[in-house]
Length: 302
Image (cartoon, rainbow, N blue to C red):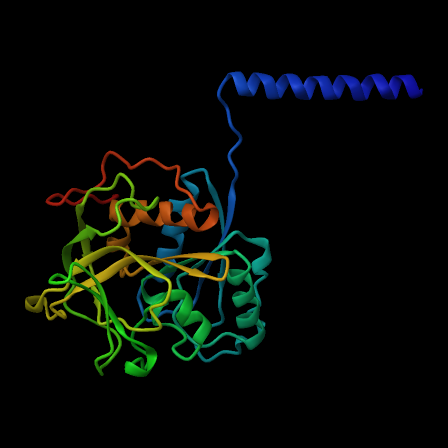
């Protein structure tokens, strides 16, 4: 009996070695699949439930992610039941802008990111929680909900200085002009998320967030866009894509994605996919798609 068990174990071990050898010779490397939790529910933007479905699809089509959705109670309802288990996930993607979460949820979320969990912040999610200091450090800059000079400086690209600057001038935090197509300019071509992307690319019709302000700590601005005065914008070159660090956690913050037509932009999709991989792993392995927009020609999914 003992000999039979020994021979069976030896056979199993030998078979496993053979499979590893064959996979290695074939160049097959097992790919880790990352678990993502998309948080939605309350939002001041229309069709964000559809936006959640779209982003879930965009992530899962890469074969690198499995995404679950946690939907909060409706505005004004008791939020105490909203207690997702962040520890089950590699990344949290926030598509949320609404009432405060329970304090226990806030503490668990802070712990998740600080201990190395990834965070992706999409568009109006940077409007949320103006009085939650840790969250505002995670997003770097945000807007609306009473944000002003007490929230921190403005952050924008100063063409004359050739760099991002922090401006402590008094004023509101958060505004945007008319929705329109605009050119996104790469500011850090060496970053894994941006590597291989064009220096400039035309984004689909969207809200161009401007005058965002906040702690602005540990921020790397990956891409910007000019907010034109003729579109009722700020007249400044504003951050569009950013990465941040909070404890051991990596954060990707995109101000793009106001509506479903904005999120269908191949530029939005690609940077979302690559940004999510980066916060999960610290690297990006996904190629740039052939239909990525150029400086003069946009590109969108049907």
